[in-house]
Length: 344
Image (tube, rainbow, N blue to C red; front, side, top):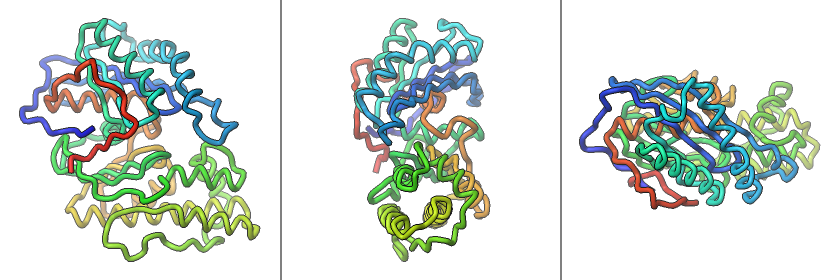
């Protein structure tokens, strides 16, 4: 799925309340935003049901995720409407994630969103999950191209240049594990629990970041790619050699943060971008935020609760589509497990 820039932006004459749905993986998210005529966006609600059933498996079980979405989506939507102080008839547009993600899980939210839009007779916008993560930062600052965007989560580590609104050029990506996936695997290895991001972040506060000498991945590369498999292997060897879990967590976190910040900063300078959006679950990591704060870049992170998968980011992506004048999506489109965002 690619997203093209609009040729004739068109902002509605009055406020539009947009309901966004995300069921791409193991979180059932419904959010509501209000798009104002001047292009500003207000966040009205963001409700997420995070599934706990997967903890015993150390990873997401797709069939269980789909069932949980079916059971929870009505409740989560009701909670979002109450938080926003709205009735369902106040909704002026609906957006839902169509990909990438787990197809069975995606279909729950996608079909729910289409049915809701049809029942309300309002426009429906199929949203790209990664564009949702990028526009989660619109809750904190107005996002206008050009800028660079790093999406770093359990399933993605992608670096996009955004030269114009709605245009995405992939300039770098992970060559193996996503950063969040590496956090999960190393946390499980060290017995720190699941999900790995928060577990490693917490354990790292008690560890020595210089205890395990991780080598920098892809040192000297001229591209802007990432690699985490080598860090994962080094962590396994250190664990077998008796490294304390806290030291392993602190050392891995330091190495992962360093490569994410160094590569992104280098890409921003190469493309002449002073503003960088950093989003996705790993963007909640305090050490990553601190390291980006020490650069010469204007770095924008999503607001509280918008780093991991949620419906508000999809509503914000829907607002961006409406503001840019993109047409509503057809109701016969399907869910897609693999959906590149980049136009080039």
